[in-house]
Image (cartoon, rainbow, N blue to C red; front, side, top):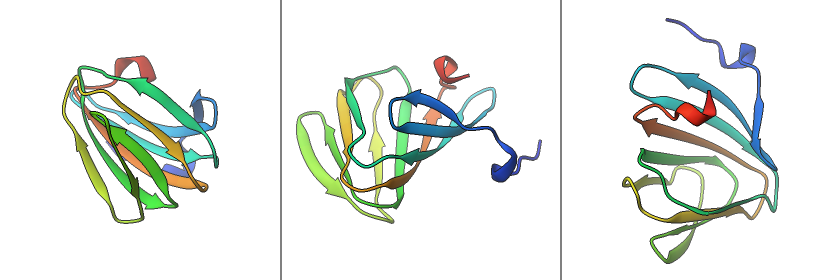
Length: 105
């Protein structure tokens, strides 16, 4: 299978979070354009998640610990850990989820 990011339609998954999503049998890959000030409320899920900050400054709380992440930073989120986030500036993020994030299809 081959994809061109420029040809994938963007979906607004939550306010201020527009994602281009690729799903396989075992993983989901999300390329996010995040508006400044957009927030992801605290939540957890059964998927392991790897977040990569491509552009911008992203405040992220994982299991009660808050840090600001910058381009090149990668955060691994184990399944079922509570986490939340807020874009301090406009951001580009990439997330990998395993298993597939079915609710994002």
